[in-house]
Image 1 (cartoon, rainbow over the protein chains, first blue to last red):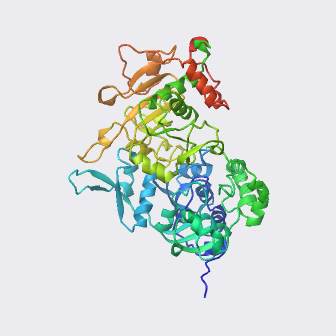
Image 2 (cartoon, helix red, strand yellow; image 1 turned 60 degrees about the horizontal axis):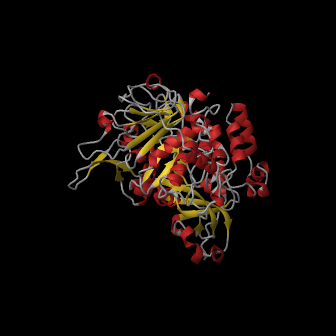
Image 3 (cartoon, rainbow over the protein chains, first blue to last red; image 1 turned 180 degrees about the vertical axis):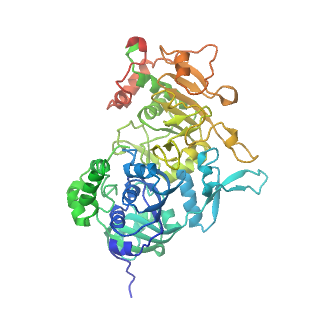
Length: 294
Length: 264
């Protein structure tokens, strides 16, 4: 018997169910599992609680009505600071929110990863974040300082969805981009982690002795692996390819009106992955996109 | 180069650079093109110990201007987000950020205009502002000084903590709030008044105190004598020019106004 966790993107979507709490790795416009997000957008899934350092992943799920509750500290596309679908959804109170600081989100995932109920922090003191019921609990230091601290509740995830560069069939993964972000914590905070990988390769080709620092989590945490070349597009999966600012502009234009959105959706969401890649210019075009400036 | 040959953007960059001058060795973060150029200028002329990043995930040996790419620069360290968070918790960072609103307590907002549950305008979310505000020094940058930015009462959604004890918790130590300077297109201000009240430090050439007060939604402290914000020196202008090769600074403020109104 050999261990083989490979599956398709649609197989991953089949593992999800209505009402789940889903953490999405990456950061804003970097290394988001977008092919998987598009598959969720096409599915009948609903009432999701989404936890993310958000970018167009959150935007697409907002635009397709998948979100019941969003746990976030920002939704932005960096070079294009305002995410149009997120804005529209917030302004129509389309879903519940828990608004956090970037570090609080980290801390909530960390607490869940440690299977703790909460972790203490000073973050949030003096701000309106603490007016939210879930952030209204405090804890007093049992030591001489007696400091009153915010209790950041654990953010337990049903699943974490991550995009990685390489994996073998057993789920030994490599994340080669310059910043791993908090993908490790998303995975540890989750019951199950599903990854999409640019390429599934033989274990030997991972060259794990040299690349071990890019192996963010051990394979018992990984439930399934789907090969998804260009699966992060239009976000980046550097060094394999950079973010596609041109397509992000098309995406923003696609939020300008219901007609524009229907058009965008028909061209870039309700299509197969092959048709998507062709619609955004093809593999060579995506690979030749230059590094953006931050 | 005459005194009137500098732009408002250059005046504001030079004023912003002063924020980090006496900070010693820490991470200097300028969010937005002009604060970023200010941090770079400070590193090049006044405080070479400052650590600056490419805005993505590297510390670069030389400050990288807005629009610059780390692939063209010497990398001196890793600035991934996990490390930025860990670093800011130690206080070894001073950020200059550009909020949408600020109030008399120095509380700022980048999340929403209007009601949080159903905002009139949703913006970014609180980002790292809450954590930044209780861990390390912060300065502020406002390209347009008016009462929509400098609001009466409190900001619509308090993202960063300020000098407002009513919002602190319990009886323990006060949060380590350390608000430094506010650079605007009218003046430089700080929190040096009684109970950290906002006060004018210097007025830009041709600007009156009354103009600053009229454009601020809360009372601003008026020192007996108020100096004029110094014009950028020839060395500062040359350094800014060398740093901002692409001339990004010329496009930040509408019509790229001069730094000295008399020159207009």
